[in-house]
Image (spheres, rainbow, N blue to C red):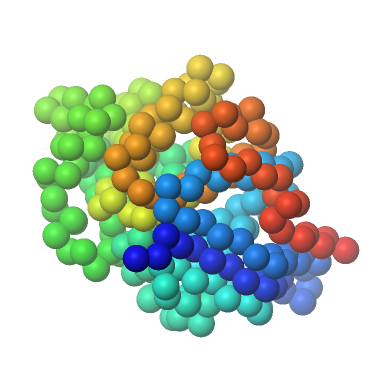
Length: 228
């Protein structure tokens, strides 16, 4: 089986004719067990890059291949299923729904998945919570707004990892955290990946957390950005 999870070739993306932003990627690959940190200043296209990788945005030209499937011209609903089955995403502000329980927040990670059995799989939720030092019995029905920052971090990681997706994307997940919580978050994320062959792409405004990543690149090494 191929080790390739994502390949991008000759991609060209622009927002619209009226917005002067253009992003080009000649070639990019993510393979099994890769961990790639992409850093750059705000407004340099990092989040746009992740949205293209996941199929949330569509390029004007070029090809994006995810696990052997060319997704560039697939429908929005097909892309939703691909994201649901194969991607786990950690957002900048964790994006937990405050009045949903821990269990339901975790299972939201598979809302669009075709793997129907995951949507009510308490066993996998418990395994993930135990692995991330979240007490299942006391926290499973607790609302997200009642959690500490550290607990919210762990729930966000569990939501990204539910169903063992092959690809993990992390969009500035440490930007709102202090130095100690940043390191703890990265340690948690890598601990969770140790037992699998998942590929990780994380974008950040700096490269201070680079020591755990196999590959560290400035966004300008991957994308050609034109704002003129």
